[in-house]
Length: 287
Image (tube, rainbow, N blue to C red; front, side, top):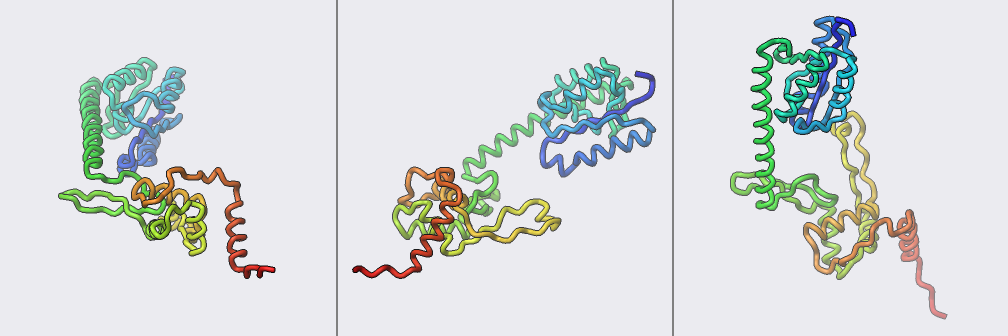
């Protein structure tokens, strides 16, 4: 490779909070601005959406292979902790890149690996970054422990349920409660003993229960129209039934559930139509 500077960039994002604070697009834009300002050709921007506590990152591996092949000689990153949050891995990566003839540039401070003070400044940042990572793990572990003690629900609500926040002490705790459809299912289950999923599906379909499909991000932002509610399906009935049995079981629910795959596709819908049609026809008179 000649003495001409060829720039590459590395972008890493590992959590939703980081994504909101400093998106990959924003990081890439800073690297592109640096290349434009200096008049350097930009070879590639490598992007990993993984934690910095591990070296098992596909784009990082590609970056190291390309640096060994001398496809670029300068690497831009917004902060050196984008390379790693483990101080030993960080030091090894810095050493390997410098050994491949790569000059590292931190866009936030414009500090380069050729400057004497870079080792001191970046080393301190690496120590702080590793400490913050350990603190974050400890906070997450404590959060899970407290959530378990308060019987809080973590994650998305299953079909037929919604999350309601209840104030317990000084905390707002997410609790799982049945929504209007879940309540309708519970009422049907409480009305009759040992109602199967199939019979439950018949009753829900007969009542004309509608379910609105899960709204995507584009639909929430108004980029695409929100789909209209649709008649409940057997698969959805099965999911609601299974969630009720797990989170608020009703007496008389059978131990074994028939998976939707156990029934031929379309057979339930056709049988439902036949049952309704037969129920509407007058019974034949005995001869």
